[in-house]
Image (tube, rainbow, N blue to C red; front, side, top):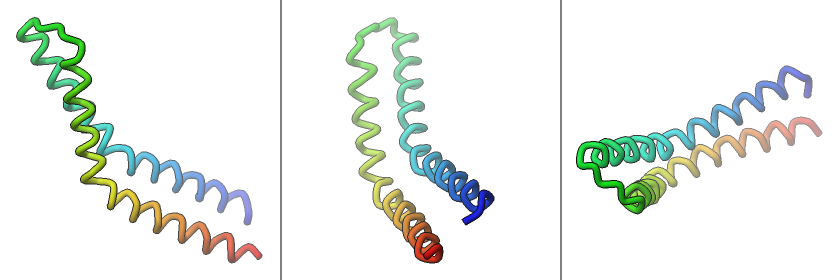
Length: 88
């Protein structure tokens, strides 16, 4: 395995991390911004108002997106294992 193949594999792994984490992070971001907007408009500064809905939204997003994430990771790991087998 030469340097170019190693760099391509690392690049694929980093892009896969971004691809897998993006939906959950974006949902957390949008929920956090929406709650901050509501807090700014109503001047309610309750700290638990930020965390509880955001945690619930992230858990719901994980529940929805986890099967797709696992499928994506499985495909990547199978291709990585095939590359390792080809080395020997």
